[in-house]
Length: 469
Image (tube, rainbow, N blue to C red):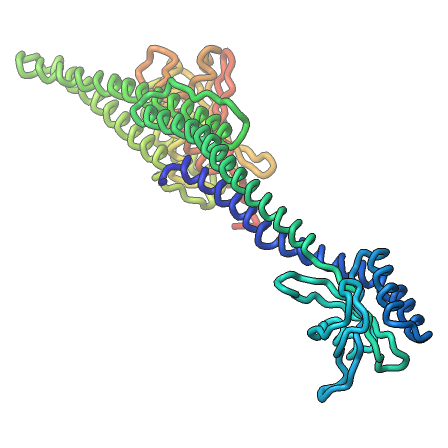
């Protein structure tokens, strides 16, 4: 009973049962009341005209036989029983007391008080009611026949309601039979529909189990456009994204392992050489210099991997404050002074005080270090590097431009990929990926433009107006 299939089938069964119960308990009584009211309306239509004939006959002194003949004639014409009652004063007021003529009786006889007759006497007008006679319901309409406010006689037109009750009973039986059939059909149909949906949901469940086990290659067939079909489409899209992420994760681990293994093996080799041999001071100094370079490379790679993990986990804090790009550029360029001298290259800053961004100063400096280091690493000696700031509308730009050979066309679209290195120069291939992600986190962008003889990286950030200072 806890399965979706059983719950859905039970829900359809309950709704159908409620609909059948509503028809049986509400519609059938309403139908009975409507048919009864219709019969009373027909009696009320014929009663005034026919009672006038009786009143005229009694005023003219018609005999009892003539009255019986007249009421039988009216009975045959209208299809309703006609009873003329005499009114007699009692302790509680005038009331019908005896039968004067009855189309269904051969002779007069005392009868119980008709409710319609009593109501007509009290109201002084036409009155209708339903009375139970010998267990059967009878519709009655009574009209006063005497002159003045208190009639001496009452004409009662009555018709049994057995045809109404028979029709209602027939409809009730038909509703019960049809309802039973509908319930069985609803139960069967609900079970089949629920089974179909349950089968599709189980298919999703099996696919989810496969995904949890690392299988991202088995798509779910989409066999309809309903909610389950849309869920299958969304699941397939999720599966594709998970496959892409899993592939990127494996590639990331492989690349990271390779990048870490190279300096570690290099350090291990130099340590063994220093332990096994007794190199001369010049060779020892060269070994130490190379080991220092490998340690620096390993340190930089570790820091880059840590930054990437923080970015992926959304754990890297990024502040938003006023940053004068020219000041940051001057400070970072000063840091790279010794490296530029070793590279026999020049780094020039072209900046003004007006270029101010709303960003994190530490992250802006980190991006600049990555871009300048990238320019020194991937250009020949003697390259001229320019750091420039500019204002364009509601944003400011920080440009790092070099006059090196440029980036190959095949590499331009991939320079921001993790671990991508476009040449044989050593590097982790993580710097530009980190720089772009940091730019995006600060609400900016990092774009590349390159051709032969010029490479330009432009960092764009939201500007801060002078009035906001």
